[in-house]
Image: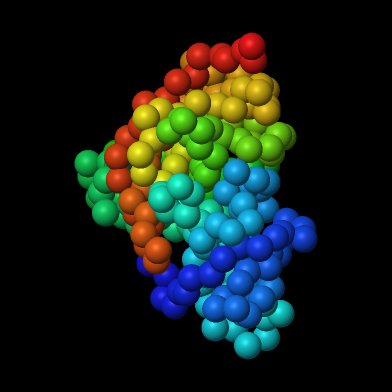
Length: 232
């Protein structure tokens, strides 16, 4: 996926989870933050950021904050980007060998999953989770407790029992990652739900992304480590 019109700025502060102040060539601009997560390790005063111009004259904010430079590594933090990149990746035949049709926001029972894939050979639900939290080249999810995320994992397991293939795809929005782990310290319940779902047949996948200032593409699989971690 590619952004059409970007520019660089310097992050100043984040008054709330929806907006930030960014210095653009000496002018302070209020911008929309396209990620409502905490992102405390990313949005540090003085950090170089990338903004995407919305092009909508009716908006209160002209720009979206989509990317940040963390110690020389670009990390995409646009919460909408993983679904878009995943759909492109699936339509390119990167996961399934046969040609498939891909549908977004597919409702099933009381749930609505990010993607549904169909072909003469398969029916598969795919839930996509974007990952921006990194420590020591280990990616972790979530960066805040997510009851909704636990619900999605449990409902994917129910779909397996009814004959569907199910996948939980962690799209790590950066390169240079050696493995993926649940964030046990922040939300152990999510990690335990992942472990239980895998035992029931849900496929847990993690892939890194090639990220530039204006693009993000899913690239390589990353090892998934679901062994429960305990704080020392």
